[in-house]
Length: 402
Image (cartoon, rainbow, N blue to C red; front, side, top):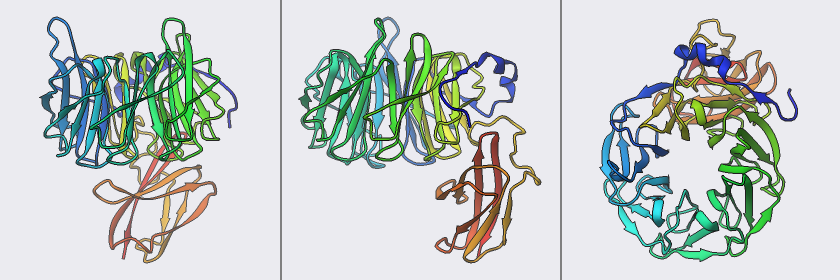
């Protein structure tokens, strides 16, 4: 395994972009798209917009068929930068000029809420339907405990823009950001629901933060014009640089504990299958700025960016021909059919996922040995898909549960 920081050069992959398994979807707009969020494998939203001549303010794109078709909604407020759905019906979106919107009917209607601030709000996060935070310019942190009826300012202790926030429970949260011009970074941590925030030493401007468990988190950002990912394994007290890329990174998302994606400038998409130890580039087929990435299931993901860009993958973004859907791809599943357990034989370490035929993730297990037993006794009878994500690609198989 590689240790320390290394530079990932993306330009060498330009010539094979035609083999990318990220495909461009028709968004129906040329406006900047800043955030993507799916409530399940089919139903999703994209948020963005523009101001000035020709700008229509905030735009919401909605799909109910996995991105094949998108319906345009105009929010009636400034451009939108981020969203979070604590349930499939209740969601919040935030953006320019202190804009906050709420839906209680799965996105059919959106109602403005009063934030009490004119500042940009680039990120919002809820731990349940009533309790959430949004962060923004000038070190703004707002909290609600009544579903957004009231938003109360919290003291951040920083003058810099906070760009992303994530809570692992009602008490423990991390906010990240910084100043673009001076390249000053900031990480804030709270252990009491935001009543007080502690500044963590940080030299990097960060755009996005994501936690896979209460202790393990990742943040992506800008290191003097280069991209950077940092990782914590102690709940955010200490952060270790993992990788430097040739372009700044703007969004990060982990659909599983060991499987993660980051996106950024110049069409950058990188991925890891070993919890950040190694990262590899995936051709995106675009040179646009990419701002947000989201995976409703482990192998189906979406990326959005400038000029109305929406990208989608159905196979984790791996290029055509890399260990996928081949009869002899090295993945052996026995017995098949099975009643209580299956044995997975593969020569690669990675993350194993069992999905039903609707694409919903049912089981997850790490593979560290050539042979691994998986308990499937709790599954309903039917056909299931097995995917193994490793450093060099994805292996696919199926089995029948009797």
